[in-house]
Image 1 (tube, rainbow, N blue to C red):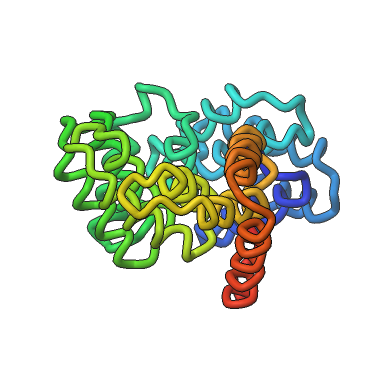
Image 2 (cartoon, one colour):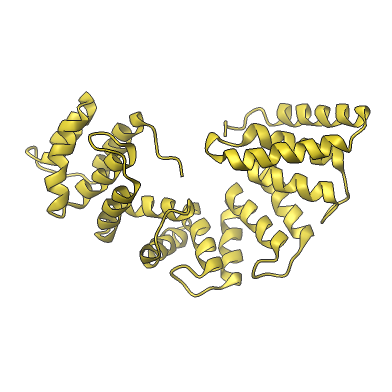
Length: 282
């Protein structure tokens, strides 16, 4: 997971402050928020620390952000998670949402799973995509819920219906690997294709690999190159290892192409970019 850059702390803390209204003027948490706005993180941390220790859920959440960013205190992922866990246990909405994010990024602990599962269920039942994505992974792995592949697929499909590229890639990966469902390359290509069309780098890379091998689709090294090249440009900085894999895939595809085919592949890349110029950056 990428921990947010420093400037994000003030924005996130202010958002958390707005999430709970009605605090008295002489509230140390409000004083801490004012200190954050001034850029005085050390003073803000001194104000927040005793409030968090006394059980103030909002202060506990903000403590987690301090430790996540290393502002006012040395960066410590473990401490960040511990404070967010305390806040989430009291039902503070931003903290509960953050614990879901930690789970999706592989940073939650087994003791978090039941609480995360409950939060995800509430979000999913309210048709929120993040909760639907989360429940899919929890049912797939049996984290906080009984393992149930059908439920995993069902929740991912609900998220995909709302345009979730992450859910589409998850569905593609599940079918490609035959993980708790029968292996089905055609379904993998279908779902990777939907994710790739939305600019999802993982969907692009995986689709390109299948196309190059002719699994679930006609073998097409030209299109394999196209998707690998597009994936390289769409991976965010934190996914360096996956980007390296896409670079390797692109190289293997290029080695199979004649000069004319390579020119055609590059033309397809340019055409895709032109037709998807309105996509947000990765």
